[in-house]
Image (tube, rainbow, N blue to C red; front, side, top):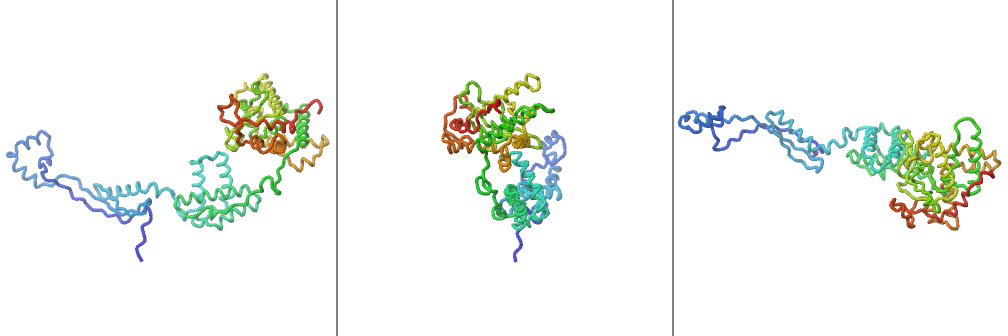
Length: 475
């Protein structure tokens, strides 16, 4: 049986040998004399007078420091070849230290890439390295995406496999992790768990700790039911249901006017009408700022919105993200009811400014938000709409109809999309354009420089039928 190969990045026995001083012919003997330069020059010019001294100097060895050379064989981790490395020093210890420094410098990019991790290290340390990698090299991941991954690691991955050794990270424990999440019914989290486990295995492979195919070791988690399937039917509101909900919100607003507490400003009503009229996601509606509103005199006949942001929860605080969920901005045509809701909201903001309760608006001022001008959370929207649906019973409408639907703010977007899709002037193209897909319509000249697609105004007829202007005096 042959000798086993030296591990990558390792070296063999270190040999140290002294190096004899090199003496060249024609060496000037007087250069070995320790004397001022003028004296040495005189000695060179009078060799006869210094003959005896010159003979003595030629027999003397040059005054040089001793030299030692250290040598070893090193297996390069980049190529796998064994190479010889040498270093010198004035003592044996210095020669050895210089050699070890050369070895360390040569293997720095490889031998230390895994840090202190080995195949026998615990998986918990590998998870720590993965989370550190997420922070240092986020790529195109958004902060909320990294936070979601950290939450899944803390809640699902770490408790079940952190005490295993990295070499024990096989398909069996990984299947157990995914099965536990699937059995709990959290299918969306199960999908995220599979992504995280594959990323952890890829990092382990890069560090040279494992040689595993993440796609084979980590199985695909069952996907949640697709929207529109029998298991998960699309929930939306008809024009009649939208009408009832809007009336309930108006009644709720009027009832609160006569009660103690902060004065209501009618935002839930206006939010519902803007979300439904423009098919906006709740976060997109809450992220609208003044520069997004194209309803001035230049757009009186064809008003529209620029949707270029959304609201996200980051580090426990609510922020306006300067891009939508898909990362693409879009323009959306507005029906008359949505335009009226926006104008009502602008009038309310102007009144607060006159009373000195709000600073003067800027292009970045939020259209909807708290009394302090900060963004609304998704939970605020749900709570406001929940109060309104509870009033439907008092209005004598079919509460069970809404109870089955379990109204959520996102249903406003689906209601608008469904109405446009089935309308005679709408269809697939109009629906896709409204929801954020590309459209070939020529942009108006004054927004052409924004690089956005023009709004599809063919959807207005369907939206006006779904969302007519309410006659508040008739309520």
